[in-house]
Image (cartoon, rainbow, N blue to C red; front, side, top):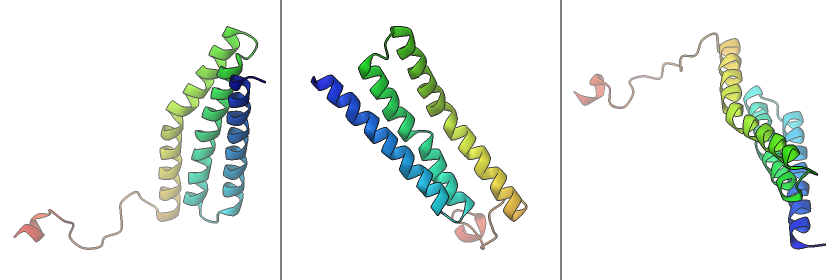
Length: 114
């Protein structure tokens, strides 16, 4: 085994372990927002590590490597958008609106500055 193969195996194992931790986190957490945190990590951390492993091994052809890395890039770019939209939808469903609770004047408002 050469160093590249060992690095590829290590990143693959780390990616699979990250996916398992994220799945356990989604299963274990009680709140929708905590679950969303683990689901978002599951679509970012694991695929990136697995994509690095695919890139290191060559995935049997150049086009296969390009396709795998394009899929990882697609997940990394669009995951924050999906996570944000899901969080907003959950907030609207639970609280009825997106406004923060009224807790008095905020810093920098005219009421505080005089």
